[in-house]
Length: 163
Image (cartoon, rainbow, N blue to C red; front, side):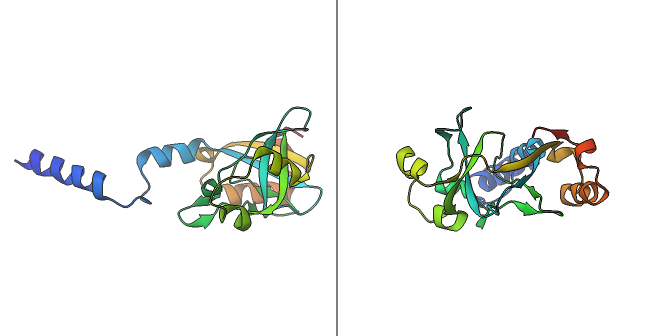
């Protein structure tokens, strides 16, 4: 009887629970997300990142407007020390930035066409530096740990330098 009641409660919570509830799968995925730390030639922290081809001439990946939100908040990068940012969306070596801000893009009903996105590119080669600091599960408090590395000048020793 206890097992039946427990299964019933589990089933009800699974089908009727909040859509914003964090599941064990969400937590596991969060721990495996990369810790990418970067600096840019100009301030683009609020601009939408897109993936570019190796020659940086064409957009090969871009977010859907709803992808820029997490639990009702914009997934802007986290400001660190010395002009560095902790990525919260998906920065890589072939990242470019659109002229559109996260807020403008997230308000769209659907993503623009690739041609419109390419016309809206602000910078095709914005990164001054890019470091891979592992995954989020490797640090209890990534913002503090990476901030400490930046303050001591040890970012390039503690993380893999990609650019």
